[in-house]
Amino acid sequence: MKFTKLVGIALFATMPVAMVQGDETKNTGVILLNPQPQEKVEQVVEIAGRVLAPGYPVVLVRADQPGCLWWAQERPKKTSQRSFKASAQIGNDNSLDGSRFQIVVLMVPTAEGRELFQPGASFRELPPDLARSVETIVVLKKPNGILGNPKRTLTKLESRPEIEPVDSQAEQAKLIQSPTENSQVERADLVTCSSLDGRKPIVLVRSTQANDSWWVQAASSPVGKNRFVSSARFGNDSTPTGTRFRIVAIYPDAEQSTNLRPGMSIEQLPAGVARSAEVEVVRINSSQVAMTNAGAE
View (spheres, rainbow, N blue to C red):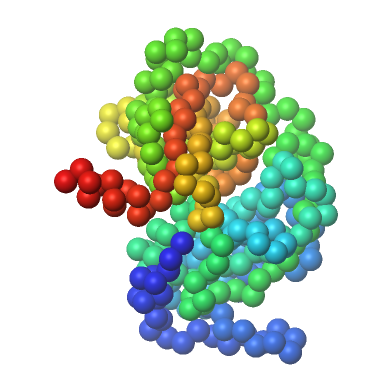
């Protein structure tokens, strides 16, 4: 993702605060208070921090390995004049116990700039000119339960056999309004779905490669009567043109939805939860879209 425009407008009115850690001095506009360095954390961890400069805090996580992507987490909530908290997803169900992850908080100076960091978005590199916290390394401790709840042996998703998938294939297909089967999508694109029995959809995406995981996309927002739109990611900057992806919308109740956070991955769709038919699409890049539009004119 290119940050030329963002960096161009991202100059702070005040200089970021200098923070000293050991022999190293770093410019920072925010301090990460929780978790602590080298702390053992579960798959879902609470982030707490304090801002030192104007702007909006954005939490990102990546595996502590070469070449791994940074993943934007849910937007922090303000807890006091300069404090905030947020939940972050550390790895996924395939991550090994003891895996190390890096957490960083950026300070984005404008609301417009913050829109580039939608929950679930991934980045190979972060803009160098934004104030940020010192990167904190944590260690994943795999829970005995599900999705970070060690005392929980059965989730609501697994215990609702009375919720049946939609039977009619015609009705299933209508639940995802756009994109349509075999249409073209960019790296970041919108998915429009209908509601079902008063429930809003949760959109998931995966590639068509064998054994690939489903990835939960950004929370859907209403755009009219019984219609919702979600920002979805189809691969990353290095995903080849022509890569095919599948989209599905599921319709859990409010309590079930708490187990499905944007940016997390699941191996299988939850049983007993109504869902749409899957829609297969093809990834293209922005330049191809421009050429297609030019040709149409």
